[in-house]
Length: 176
Image (cartoon, rainbow, N blue to C red; front, side, top):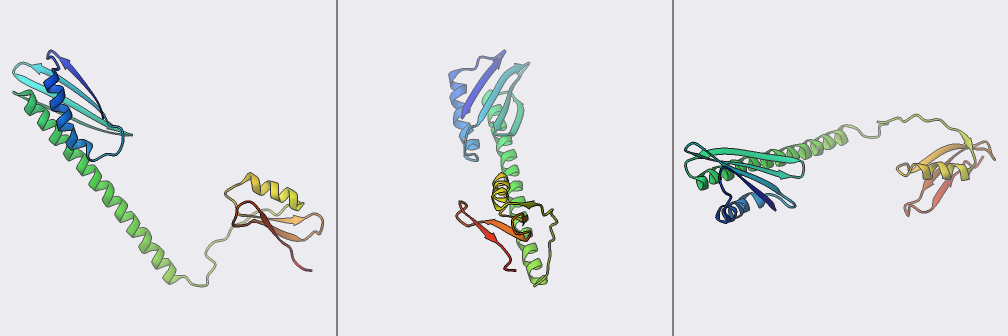
């Protein structure tokens, strides 16, 4: 956790720094990783204002409060930040849970309804080439598991496929 404290019209004392570090442990427990904390303290008339900004990865949480006592203002900010983080975490967890349940339910429903059906059709060009050329084409697209082509030597449709070891290939050729 990296904490930066800036004072405007108020000196950021060591006691305030220690207090902020101690209180930020309440926020730190929600995250794994680097946390950037920027604290600005200032005085306006009779009010002591504490402004806190917590940045974690791409998320930013912010709180600004004013009180007669600087320590009370810091406490309020910590409460606000903790509430924001808990709310965000709860929403995220609920969304992840709901999405996974919907996906699972959708998959079970689809599996129950569809049996022994062709549910997807993919169209592609079959080009004449040698098995060696087909192997090179297949290596260009690591996400593909097979390629269908017309063998130039036999003028028959062949399929070249990657074996499970992802190092070797298999070739399907018709007998006639």
